[in-house]
Image 1 (spheres, rainbow, N blue to C red):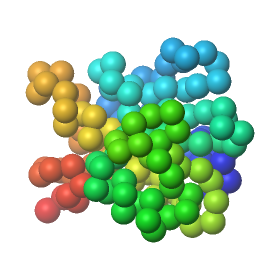
Image 2 (cartoon, rainbow, N blue to C red; image 1 turned 180 degrees about the horizontal axis):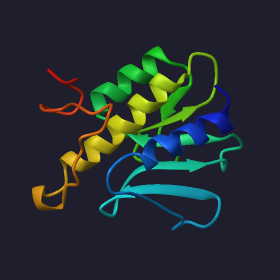
Image 3 (cartoon, rainbow, N blue to C red; image 1 turned 135 degrees about the vertical axis):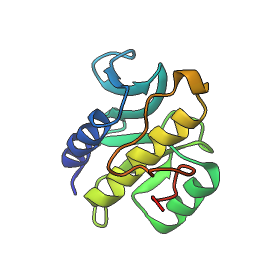
Length: 135
């Protein structure tokens, strides 16, 4: 998947998530997607190519970077908690949807319970912790 297709598909995935809102707080070069005011995805071409920047569990982020050359530490973000995904061979819709959804669920899981939107989506677990698929 090329970089522009990556960003378009990621934006479509994010739009499907409850409470997700697109903003441009850093100007027109940055698309920032938030849930309840907390960032879970950024899209930009500032590094010279189209990229996604997503929140990730530190252990999972390390494993993702080890196994996929198109995943690097988060551009201009905390390298432990954020990853950057760029287009390329092996980057497919399944991976993009999973990373966007996992980023969203990670952010939602840290919101106060009263502020959490319903996270029941076609790719989210019916019950259990984020990352567990329905039982």
